[in-house]
Length: 257
Image (cartoon, rainbow, N blue to C red):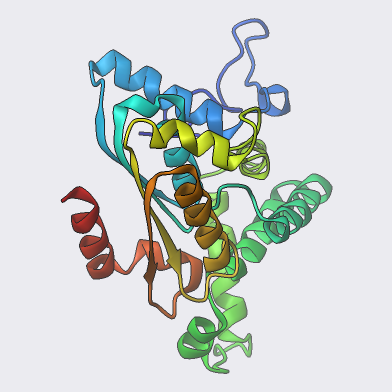
């Protein structure tokens, strides 16, 4: 399933506005993670799928998984947010703001730089040291710099500044307790239906650290949910959920028992 506001299927800034005949661009409405979850349910309804055994995702996907469960608490058996908090952390908001200011000031060149900055928050110091270790390219550029520039260019081939803004804005407003009397009260809706939660933190994650995931699990336990904390051990930082397949297999097998 594609996320609302992205480029890969659902409506987003590159979609054509029926009124103007032009892409929405920056006029595309600001959306929330909750909006993205509701769009997921619209698709599930269209497919005739009324219940889910497991809602799982990493990072923004984990935020969406939480909201998918909270939108219809009686129709989810277990939710497993990976490297995702109950509410966006303030350090992440700060990094996001810097990225958006770079994009606003420099356009597509800024999108390249914003992506480079973001990549540094997705990995860990250990990972960068192990991968690059002070090496330089034949032209004298530090290998880490060459790598980041490559990642920036790759994003320009498949993305645009307005879509980047839309998704960052959605993440920055993430808060499962908004308009629900706080996180604990929100999670009580899941506890009432016996929904279980496994919060998965990632060792060395500087973006949505293990403390944020533990706080989510603590709130779930306080609400009366059957909740557990698990951790992925890796040198990869936040992006470990994209590469540590053996650990993920074990975690998801446990969740589906």
